[in-house]
Image (cartoon, rainbow, N blue to C red):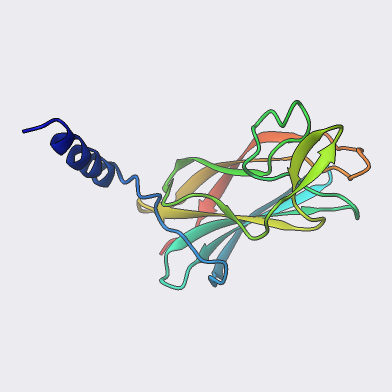
Length: 178
């Protein structure tokens, strides 16, 4: 048997076995229902409200809404590097880091960033106002369930005034039963 006839089937089987299909994905018109408000954190001019939602099939999704507390502040795109672009900005992130919840797909956002040119550096920023990130999850276990997330963000004005970033702030969530 030729090597090329072995490689493709082997790669496909490996992808199926490791769950590399990317998990649950949602269209822009997907509807979610809040099941429980989990926590709220306000720091450095941004309020972050974290909730547990259900998708239309009843599957759990963790939602984090990042809302600047002052007018004129924007947040940065979730996909920018953790250290910013050439040192400018910090990404808006929701990272699941442990507990009874595990990722069942990629984090996605309710708005798309646009590029802001700062001294020749293109920075992905969200429009002023709230930004919602969602993480599809699977919840396992019994009894009192908890999960840990880390949130990161940096609020700035387009004029260049920036607030101190919040990076990898760990938050524990108490998940509702059922």
